[in-house]
Image (tube, rainbow, N blue to C red; front, side):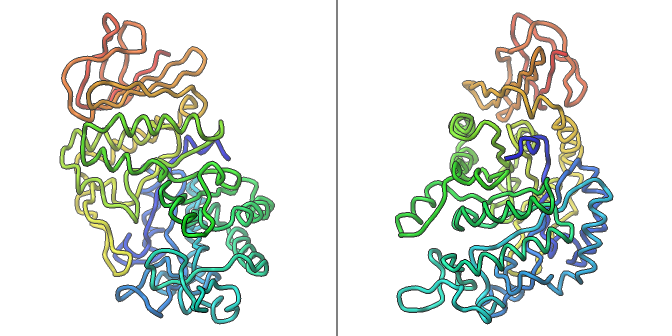
Length: 426
C-alpha cells in the first residue's frame, strides 16, 4: 500500500480516441494541458496489438491483446511510446499502462506458442471462465512457466520507464502471482505503483459460486497500492438515479474506513472507459460541478477520465474509432474547477488527517479532515439546498479556499451556497 497516493490525481487516456491522430504522439502533444490540470499520473488504456480473430467492431477491443511485448502499430512505434514516457517524466508526471492478464485474444502469441498456458473448459475448448467475452480466452495460472513469462514482460516495460500498472480484472488472477510480480517490479523501481481493477462485490461471489477463484478487496491490498471503488459502486449508481440515496453511498464510503487496512487508498472517480459519462445523466450545472469537486475530497486518489473536464456526455466506443469531443472544453468552467481542486488536493491533511463524513438530512455531502490543530471542512451542495448546516468550525469568518469568497459562521451555522465550500481554521 502507498498512503501517498491519497494526494495524487490519475488521468485516464484512451490513446485511440484522445486526438485526431489517434496515436501516442497525439497524447504527447497534449501533455502540457494535462499537466496544467494538476495531474500526477497519466494512465493509458492497453497499448498492445489487438487480436483480429473474433474481434469486436471494425477496429477491435484494446483489452483483446495479441502480443504483450509490442505496441499497437496503429498507435505508433516503440520509439513514439518511449518519447511519450520521457515527455511525461519531463513534466513531473508518471506514466501507467494497462495490464490485461486474465485473458488474451484468440490469436495471441501466447496461445499460438504455448496453448498449454491457456484455460480450457470440460470439452477441451479455449474459453473464458465467465462472461460472454467472445473475442478473448482465459489464461491458466496452474502453469508456473506462464508466471515467469508474464512477470518478465512486466519487468520489460518497467525497465523501459513505465511507472505503474493498472491491472484489468485483477481480482480474477491469483493473488500469489501479483505478490510475486510486485516483488520483482520493486527491484527495478522502489516506487512502482500497482493499481487493481478490483471487481464488484456481487461479482466476486458469482465467480466463486461458479467454482473459480476471485479475491476480495481486503485480500488485494496484499499486492496492490490502490484499488477501484467498485466494491460500493452500485450505491453510487443508485444515487445518480435517485437523489434521496446520497447517504447510502456516503455510508458505504465511510464503511471503507473500518474494513480496509489503515493505510489503504481507493481510487474515486465519476467515470471511466467502462462506465457511462456522468454528464449524460446529470444535466444540472450545480450538481455536476459539486460532484466533480467532491471526488477530490473523498479519502483516496482522484481519478479523471479524459473528456470529463469537457463535460463529455458520450462514452467512446471500445471497438471503433470514436474520438472524444473536445468542443465543449469550456463548459461549466470545469477545467478551472479541476485545477483548483487539484491544487487543494496536495494539502497533507487529505493524506494524513482523520477523515469523517457527516450525514445531513438533505442532498449535501459534508466532510472533515483533522490533523493536529488543523481542521478542513468541505461541503458540497449537490441538491442546491438553501439555508444552513451545523459547522464543525468555530464561529468566525473564513476564506472559501475554492473561490476566495468570505464564509461567516454564526452560532455554529454554516450558510450553504451553490459552489463547493472548502474552509480551514489555520
